Length: 431
Image 1 (cartoon, rainbow, N blue to C red):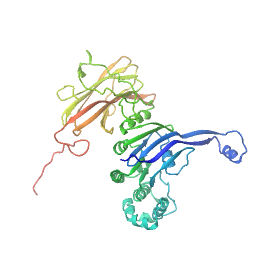
Image 2: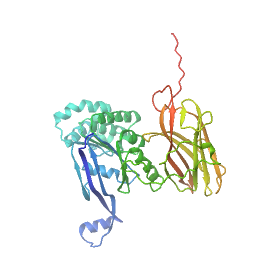
Image 3: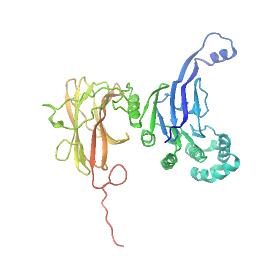
Image 4: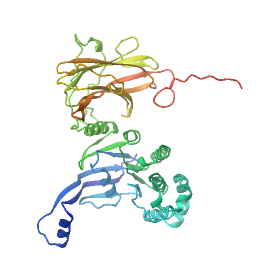
C-alpha cells in the first residue's frame, strides 16, 4: 500500500432545508417571504478523512448517520453545502438501486450508458461486454427494460458493470445485500481480487463480518459527524454500543483512533472468588451499560475443572459468570460471545436462547451462571465477551457488557475448514 491519497475529504458538510409544508417552500422560492420558513438539517457536518491508494476502507454507522451521503458526494451525485472532495483515479460506484440507470432502457443499453458516463468508448465497452454479461448471469433479460427487473437481477447487472470497467477506485453502498447468497459470495471473491491488485475500495455496509474481514480501516459516522476511525475491530465495538443507545466508551489499547476508557470493575480473586484465581483477563477490557446488573467475575474451566485460558478442541469445558444485581431486574439474560482476533463474532449463546430463567434477580441478589459445552472451534486464538441484558418496559436494555474480557486459545492437533469442526466420522467401502 502506497502513501498516495486517492480520496481527500476536507471539512465536508451537507445541509438540507426542511419545510413544515410545501407552501413554505414555494413562498421562499418565489421570494414572497423574508422570514426563514425552514429548519436546517445537517446530514453531514465538518467531516474530514483521506483514503490511500490500495486501502479498503469501510464506513459504518446507525441509520441516518450520513454514510450514503458521503458516497454520493464523492461520486458527484450530490454537491456539498461546504467543504471539498478531491479524487485521483477512475471511480466505479455501486450505490442504491437505480443510481445511474435509465429505467426505460434495456439492460444492454444501460451497460453502454454507464460505460460512456465513465468515459469509455463503444469499442472499449464491446471488449468488456462478455465479462459483464457472464458475471451478471441474467440471461435474455439483458434485452428487457430494467424497470421489469427484480431487485436481485438489477444488482447483478449493476455490480457486473461496476467491476468490469477496470476501475481504480470501487465505491459500494448497501446494494450488495439485495443479491442472493451465491452472488454475494462471487462479489466478495471479486473484492479479494481487487485488494490483491492494489485497487482502492470504499464500502458502506451493515454486514459487520464483511467489514471486519475486508477492511483495513473503518470510519464511524454518527449524526453526520465522524465520531472516530481506526481498526475494524475497535470501530465495530463502538458501533455496537451506539446500536443499543449507549454513549461509546473507547478501549485503552494505544491503537490509532482508540483511547481513553476505564478499567473494568471485575472483582479481584478472594474468599468468594477462588474459582477464578489466577485466570488471565484483559486489563483493557471495554465495558459499558447502565449497571442495574453487573458482571462481577468470569472464568473458563477445562474438562478437569481447572481455570484455564487454553481449551483442547473436542473437550467439554465450562464458562462461569458471576452477576450481581444492584437493582430489581426482571428476566435478565446472561450472554457470551466468541470472536476471532479480527473482531468477527464466531459463535455464542445466552440463557434466553437456551430456555433457562434466572430466578433470583432482586436488588442485592448474586448468581453464578454456568455454561457447559463442547469445544468445537478450530485451533487458534479467540476473544471472549460477556453480557447481561434484558427487556425493560419492552425496550432492549444493556445492563452490563464486557467486550474482549479474556483470550482463549483452542489447542488442536487437527484443523478442518472454516471456524468449527463438524467432527465427521468417515467410512470407505469397496464397491
